[in-house]
Length: 280
Image (cartoon, rainbow, N blue to C red; front, side, top):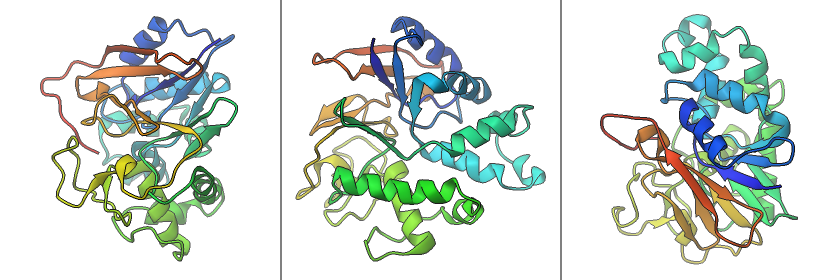
């Protein structure tokens, strides 16, 4: 029996299949943790989403920014849905769209397993949040996303402001929580996110830190596995294991075994692209 965390798939169905074969995934006894961004840009998002959905009894999934974007678009009119890229349109107009979207909408922003000693998020955590606070804030958004009032949340979740504050209420509070869990790379010591900073550490403006290195950050009682930051590459430090290694940009797709004392990492080549890059 093994538990594997897997980095951002982003619609890369072929590499996903090859990685599952390489780790010899056996649904009868193994578990998978997917770090979010199942869809978009890889050209095979429908197939990828169907694959993960078919494994739903054997996996945990957290929502990434691209997954939330798909959910937001799914609430719009068909005419608006036809304006998005063809990769997402194939999901939005698929015959099995409803069960796929509904299942995705019920995925969490954070998954934790204290027996295993791990938690999974897509992007990052606010410097001052403990694991317990992060779990509480994730539940706030998940409750709204899974309720009948989800449309208001999905319409208003976009935007770079406000910065997180415990005093926030309503949509602004939910937007700040979503931004932290799904968009965070760099921030100031006070937790203000630098959304335009997307390069590797050392390229950021003065006064900014990778979220896991901010001075005065809270100590966490669980190891963290996450994705989102492909220019960071494979990173292990400060209790954080970042495993988005840019499969959609021509990098690699990475799996990390969670239930072993030894560091066990398995990788396969990502999709073939002309010029690797990095975007949200």
